Length: 304
Image (tube, rainbow, N blue to C red; front, side, top):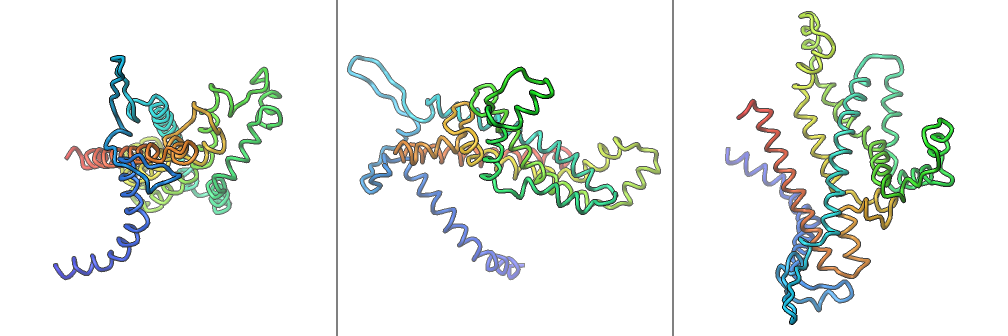
């Protein structure tokens, strides 16, 4: 047994070393910089400031007390709210739509292979390309979306989808759901393909209808795969950057945690403050992932 464990660690060692070099060391450096006053213009002149980037109390000579730092920054908490809202809505819609698409693609029909390949095209398109394509389609002056909606009588006038505070997040969600639903469908379809057909046939012989088969047979058997798909998609959504940065630049109503961190790291020359934001983003991702896995295990193991 010890020999097998030792062999396993030997096989994993190269991967762990590469992971430590490309992920672990940058993460450690980012956490370290978050406790300094580092500036991008001169990283070597940094000074240790402790938790000042996260939270600090300033007592002015006038007797007034000012609270400063990331934890009391309304812009940061607005970015957190935008990211959480985006993640919950997008992942929920993509999971439901992905499940529907996967069930359709799992059925037997003519041309199924072509449809399976075609459904993956939105996911295969690079995010930057998708964002620019949809930016033109959603343009208030030249975009085809407004033209179609006007011709159908669904809107009274042209809408600035990516600029308006009421529609900017909706536009981002539409593009993300369009692009990433095929990814969820692919993962769920892979789980459906692994199901033994005999179980479905037995359920049909017992008189179960399509809904009962899905709810009581199919879904419990693929729940673990769906949970993994949701974890991967949620992690990706929580660190959303490129889509928002291209589609709705400088829009406070869609600014995500990653966009906030990038702005402070490079645009505002507040490298330490941006490092603190990046560190909090990592902690949020880690805690949510661990919590979701733990809740999933309790649910999937029948209450244990």
